[in-house]
Image 1: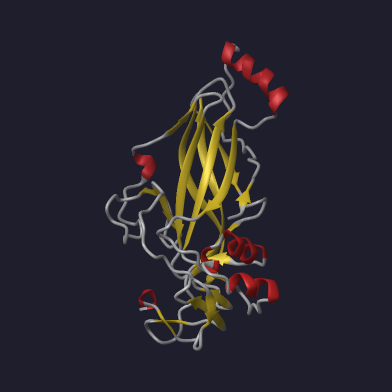
Image 2 (image 1 turned 180 degrees about the horizontal axis):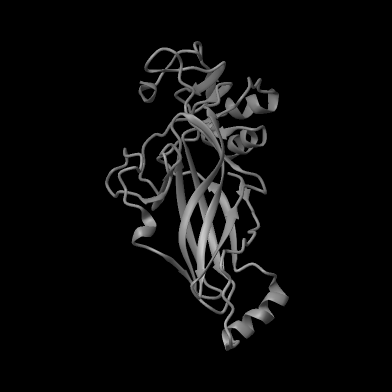
Length: 272
């Protein structure tokens, strides 16, 4: 997997309210700002893979594997190796259907920080990528995320993952922040695993995090190495029940990747 380190940019909320008296916590915050910068939140984000989601990736254009990539693809269990994921991502591959992010937050103020919302800021949405598909579907497993965001919903919101329903797409879960907040005392850390789903579109987006400090609302944007995150849904063909790509590679019995004979006609019930 590729570790993604991002820097938060605090965006000032509307309606600044300055206290008439500077309390002890605010004074300490002022000192810490000089030492540690202006960010209220520090965070680290990386892409991970749950055993329930597979490792399929798609490209906008046709990809012709070179000798070194073919060596990885033809290796026993090469299709599920981090080395293959790293190479495909570096070449411009985009996760198909699911993207799981592990975000570690750290509060950097002497006052409690409360995260009250996380939602995508979608910058662009187009048809699912239909160039080359590297198909490594899920072999089953238990979801590891406790929060899911479905980009295909009309208004995507963070939802609770419904326990005991591994085949749900998350739309049945209740909005997460209607009942929960994420509290961060100074210097304390919390790790959040967020699953994002996309069915048919190729979406580029940031994650917007809204938080409160002493009832003042602020926000940061989480990015992928300074760029938008990407996630693509299926590229469905004109025939119902079929996805369609210009070229495709799929699993054999040894978890190697081999060319598929009819990439333009791949059976997939999700394209019905």
